[in-house]
Length: 85
Image (spheres, rainbow, N blue to C red):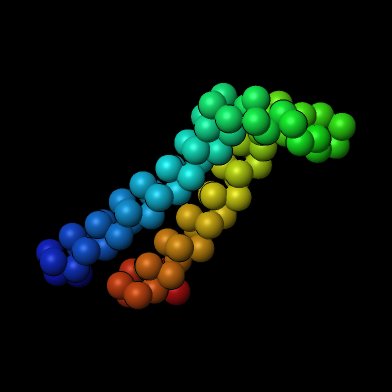
């Protein structure tokens, strides 16, 4: 790959990382700490939603984001012809 292609590849990779980590931050910090009082008015499985996000929801979202990142990176690798064949 040429140097401009490498820069574009890494720029897109960093963009994906920034977006996905921002989502994780909002879910884990926002829903688990900042918005916990508002979310606690909603029940999920008998527990307040804010408590659920703080204890389990952020972990589930993080695992889902890992799968999303893998899918996005596989597409990016194919578009730059650096995928495993």
